[in-house]
Image (tube, rainbow, N blue to C red; front, side, top):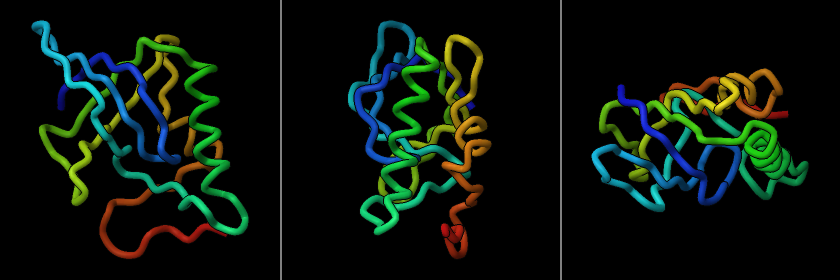
Length: 120
């Protein structure tokens, strides 16, 4: 696992973001698509709008817990869509995004194998 400083470019949904990542030694990766590891958010465009609520809660979390953020990646591992996996996403105030969003009901545990979690 590796820790990097990150800035948020955009939020796609409740578990997918685009980041600028400082890799150290004056090396940066800009506009990198990442997915939060070990969790699932409801899909966008559901009739009950749970996906939009999850996305909006993530955006609010970023405002409430400003950077600089530190992300911990799974060692050079990407998932089937090429997004790198982020194990932890910690704000300057030491709040951790994944734990907070799970506690708020916006993310559910998901290993990536088998059926996805059922959302109401």
